[in-house]
Image (cartoon, rainbow, N blue to C red):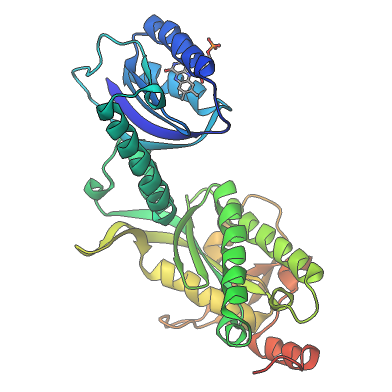
Length: 352
Ligand SMILES: Cc1cc2nc3c(=O)[nH]c(=O)nc-3n(C[C@H](O)[C@H](O)[C@H](O)COP(=O)(O)O)c2cc1C
């Protein structure tokens, strides 16, 4: 059997009758498939425990996830191989905590509100891969380190350190957040995982059969950034926002790397370093994307690939061919020196 515990936030204020109706319907539906559990509701949140056969719990969860009355569903714990039910007598006992004057219930409500708040914060700081393991009922700390094949993507902002010295800190932070948000949404939408952020740099990995998706997420980001530049006011930082992506493919070490103080679920190895080197090379080749032959060969879509040249990248002993694609957004690239020049000629009033 499986047991799932989650919290969610209501999308609007629900009346007592509406919450009671959710409970009534849940009891009817759950008793049909022998799913048991408890649903607690307070002003703005739900806390629910569901237990039963794996497929039955999954199908009830699928319906619950799509319910527009709540959002931000976060699995606190998922347990597989459960042998004994905790709520065997309840097809879904529903308790409205805010309607209770009992001090103990108030204490439980406050405790759940605090747990909800702190989980919402921790969720934002946690790697998606770790949350995914927890959703699947796997303790991420127990996942062994593996050698896996991945498509690795590295992206960052051209001349970021230089630009960041010219503008107020709020504008600099807003730009980095905007860039990371656009890139990360495109990565997630195309089936990749954001591995980590290193300053203004985003690192992501995709399954080996998703090279096209990795390329597409870069092209889409470059297009959005081109639009941002076009709509930015004169001398605004966004006007100078250019970014480069390196994409490599091969075997990496994937797993828990860290210390007793902080753990990362991450990727390591030559292939990861290669993506970082390719990302730096984008400035030199005047293209927003640089990729390896392995990535090009793994793509099935009709990208307009070009050979950008042969390069001996740091850490390599022999020159390797590097590829890019022809696309208006990918071709619209500037080097560090170009950015310096554009800023100097366009924005002489900036103090630097
Ligand atoms: C917080 C919350 C918990 C819910 N729990 C259950 C549940 O345990 N079982 C269930 O069948 N529906 C539950 N629902 C309702 C489902 O989202 C969905 O509306 C319902 O299953 C549709 O049932 P129907 O197809 O019989 O109309 C819940 C909804 C919310 C907002």
